[in-house]
Image 1 (cartoon, rainbow, N blue to C red):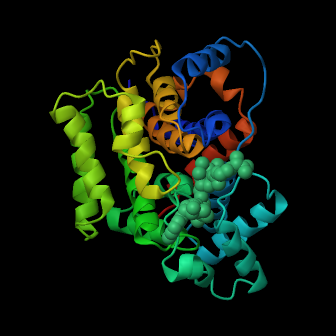
Image 2: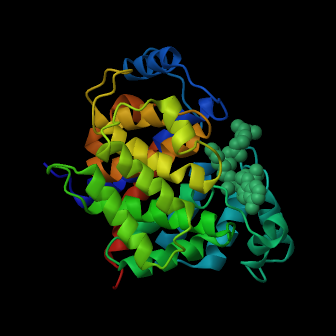
Length: 340
Ligand code: F2R
Ligand code: MG
Ligand code: MG
């Protein structure tokens, strides 16, 4: 049966955390061996060792967004900026992007005078297209799930442009936000059509008048082609080349969305009956920016399947799992008060 909305909120937040914690040990590996990854997952699922996996910047920033939404009951850019900065300076060694830390420093030095200025100045004024805006966007989709798509898009842009003003950085956050909302709204007890899921995302992005030349349209079409051309056995290594697996948003958000779709069906390289686990496995097997791709894929899969689909053996291995579960419940409560 389709899980309830609270289960989907918990699934999304816990999926975000699990992808980050379990993907982090492989971040930066160009290739991830199926033998090593298979053993890694068997160990996790069979309780082989009780090692706790630490979270990284992906979770730090996501939780700042959650806390800000719970406190303010709206997207408040100044408060978000303050929370990002406070979180960074309290734990700077959580594997943040190389350049985004300049934004945190400038925001602090300027005493948050213009919260958008430091982001605008990045990369000689072109802005960052890193995936740091998309990786933290899932709470915006959860909180605003009853808002119109255009309202949600505006919220995603407000949250992104504090650090990421490049169109590819912002649009990546919008696409990831829409994907989480679609997964949340979908009935997972009904048959799932991957081509329809992607077509709906394309239509929504088009309605926002995002430039037709945006790399997101090309990547979404490429994902549809996999199904329309019957190439569903494409390997993870091929996906890395086809869609990308890098720290840039346009080379990771479509890859995360594809990982969610791929987890729907059994994988030849990893026997597992659980589609959520398959999503995380496949996302990590693509290599590259594994924590962030798995985290974004986990957000979507968790929002679709709900928390009951996520094995407790995986949840228990993640640092701050209990805090994240409680925050998911508070975010759910805050979202009930949203007036649309
Ligand atoms: N930073 C990492 N991983 C690297 C090593 C971590 C290691 N484990 C450690 O602890 O040392 N991961 C995290 O960063 C990614 C998110 O990055 P974000 O927040 O987008 O940062 P930034 O600095 O804005 O962008 C990242 C890089 O993208 C390139 N880039 C972005 N815009 C560009 C532009 N306009 N022109 C050229 N290059 C651009 C730059 O190389 C940036 O440094 C996540 O993976 C998270 O997990
Ligand atoms: Mg990270
Ligand atoms: Mg990463």
